[in-house]
Length: 332
Ligand code: ATP
Ligand code: MG
Ligand code: FE
Image (cartoon, rainbow, N blue to C red):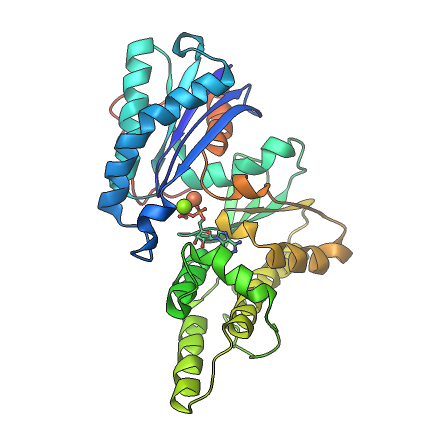
């Protein structure tokens, strides 16, 4: 089964061809990072226009690298939410057109499901039940999966997403864009114990909150500047990162104690963070569980993850009508 998958929900224009779900024949990602850098964030209108321009060449490249022609395809998939509506419409419209003209099924994929399914590309046999932490630019969700069809939301962020917190702090400290990798890089040469930032206390819940931490960082910088003190951005980044990682890891440990699970799975762009991977590995070691996370290029937005999710939907004949519309606020 050959599936062409398309993704443009944020600022990467991406296309892939997957064979039988987990075999990724091509995975082309054209990032617009340089275009949005000077604005310090994604400008939706610029992003959608650029997706329009890049999508056809990206599709051609994905087919060519896979050694596949349009006629060989068994289905075409596109993200249909959540994300920026202008971007979503670009791949969704392209996928509808391909579906209609080749008379093959159209599969509408939830972007967040895609992030989670990215884990199966390298590890098809992840044991369930599992705890999954999805941490990205727009989401911070802690989920319990009994099996892959049924899940329960244990907690989510009450304000900023984890990736959003990294991006805002990076912008505030003028470290660069995208924020996560920039803060991580600065943190590597900093002292993580330099500043003891508060961790949000949300009682018994599995929820997260990062806006208080963000304010603490800003207050700290403003106070130090008023006193005429030099700010060490590396120490600040390391201390901030440690606070984020600590609250993410603590909720995972709490969940692992309460739920009898076999595996813990990380997904989304923030799962690329090395310090996060390290701390979670250390802290779950004694629970005798397997920890999984996708390789770096499969953590951030890509089409291969959409193709994997689409394959499982294909097996269940979970096809979309041509009338399907983009849903910017789509829930899991
Ligand atoms: P969503 O998936 O919720 O719709 P998105 O697609 O914009 O949002 P992703 O592409 O999954 O999010 O991830 C991008 C986010 O991950 C950004 O906020 C970025 O700063 C963050 N990120 C990427 N690499 C790292 C890293 N090494 N450390 C921390 N954060 C990172
Ligand atoms: Mg992105
Ligand atoms: Fe994403």
